[in-house]
Amino acid sequence: MSVSPVQSPHSIKDKVSAAEWQTRVDLAACYRLVALHGWDDLIFTHISAKVPGTEDFLINPFGLMFHEMTASSLVKVDQAGNKLMDSPYEINPAGYTIHSAVHEVRHDVACVLHTHTAAGVAVSAQKQGILPISQQSLFVLSSLACHAYEGVALNHEEKARLQADLGQNNFLMLHNHGLLTCGGTIADTFLMMFTFQRACEIQVLAQNGGAELIAIEPQILAGAKAMIAGVTKSAQGMGGALAWPPLLRKLDKQDPGYKL
Image (tube, rainbow, N blue to C red; front, side):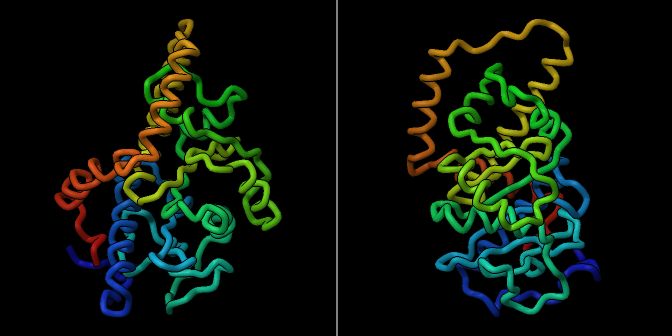
């Protein structure tokens, strides 16, 4: 696959550590998988990943679509948003505000994924938020927080409020805005977003059916929360390590250019 002129024409593999390069490849793959699943929003929304062994993180160059993302085109910034390597691209200021807020206080988090999908925004605009009506919703409700809408995230004073609302949770509903997941690996963070998105899609479809919804019994919900909390703290995390290799095989058959 040839590289589009809009993308980075030269690989930077020999300019970064092996650990950073692997993170770049996985993050670029994550961007393309988000596009493949139809969760992207033109050039908007963001996914970030911590550079191993540092407080710096990688984020998308503002102006590229998710299906164009490559390992070399990702922009490396410090916690203050300063670019640490030459890049013809800037980063989205709103993306920096949201992602730096999480990375600043959640040292257990390696990746942050934020979307504006129709189903996600639709449920984020509902007062009750995620309803306990599906198996997928149980995973989300086991570690869900909410953050009130304050407009486009350009005000750095919002960071403290977002941090307080997120706490130690891994799923964040941004009211009137969208969905956010954060996890210990890129793979886990993607899988959490898959579950979050699916829970929202199921909820909207169920509500559109017009029938009375069956809520999962509180005792089942409580038991599931305890079980899932144990699973997420295990060595296998959310199961991303199992799901990631087949996801990459699928991506490689359709769109291997992320590795450049």
